[in-house]
Image 1 (spheres, one colour):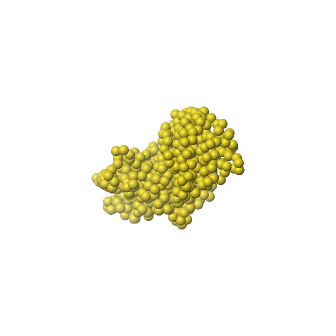
Image 2 (spheres, rainbow, N blue to C red):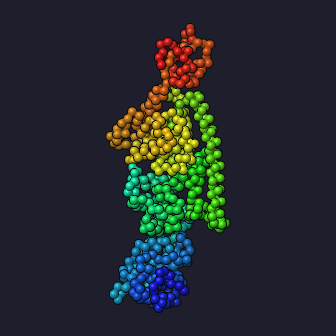
Image 3 (cartoon, rainbow, N blue to C red):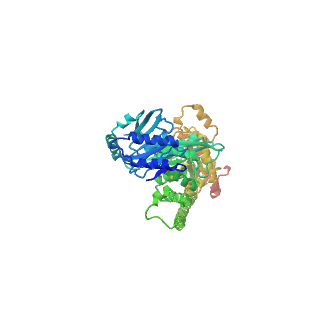
Length: 603
């Protein structure tokens, strides 16, 4: 038999006494005996360290361990069978201080190890006292197993508990609960973020984590806790400090969490190190957004772009095979000869990236042809841009009478959608709904979705849709402008459309927003001020046209046909000389009609 824990410096005769505990037997159904308790407390007083024993349901001592001078955590046991039922092992340990109240680490170990019971014993004068805790078999609304305790009390009272009957009742309750659940039915998630002391971001850590919570819920996660730490800069190895990671480890045990999401992008080494320390799935903001995009992609193009972004994200993380990758392809049958296997994986990913880039390039050429056709037919284009969930799809539906999918969730729209609207001036305009932007938008996404975002680059006018009901709407606007700069479209003609004004209760807030002529307040959902928005769009395109009076001979009907195709015809009259037409003509098309212009027309 072996004594576990830090035995360095422990004298041999004490180790012999610890080993002798393995020979002690506890009666069936009884939690412990005076003999074993007295022996454990005697050794604790000699070495001033915690002594712990693990006992199975047959009353056999399975493991004896001692703590070091600074660590109070209990060692793992191999006998644990399932996280869905009790382990069949009870833990009895000493508290050198004599205070037998169960600590938070004690309770965390009870939850994590699924002990039949956790018992702490201590000596106070001539009295031996103890405290006990065990599962009730019930769960709270957050699906955290509930505990019940007794003590500090006398060891006599503890010995009177019928452990066999108690564990039978608990196992029955757990079986009922487990019958209603499936393993990994939900991803119980902890959110984590750093509050950087010298951050240049206008976002507070609270606002950023609130948005991360929305992202996680959109992906289907259940949030069980949020963790922050103030630091000058992220730790190179663990992102957080080591102490904070240990604190999170305890939180995982308390909340039953099986995933943690960081608010910033982690380096491959940080992700691997954190996974090794916490033992659960570790994601960062980028991976979370990619997961949402993978769920939302519908078109072939959208799926290609998501896959491209995922592969670019995964490539530097292929070495080390962290928990996330191992879940995808690890285990028996996937082990390779070290670095050679990794190189094969990397080469496969690079080949796949190259193949997808070729497919996207072909799609890009198709889009270019469509754009050239639109330009040749002189149809003006408007692109809806804005922060995710600002109401772009709802506005597209309201302006064009279409039924594009719109939902009050982040990234409800992933694939671009174009619809046509006819303005009151009889001009036809194409309006395109684009993917929403977000703060800390991963570079992988911007580059992968460049083919789609070219719709923004080629548009004549941008409608920057802003959720006016958001407290941090200014920061959201800045995030959108940052991406537009990256796309080299920040200088394009833009109307700031403050949406959801029906949710505003303070008129002064709206007045603050509408301080420039290129701003307007609307509610796409309630159809508020949409006519005014259309008027602003008309005014913009009217500035690009020139009003002409033309007299076209009857034998040149093709000119009239062309005029109707590329201009806004306002009136038509007929006289002996031909057809008299008043029309608003694009400046670049004027030369085609110069010979028909009446002398009094000025340009």
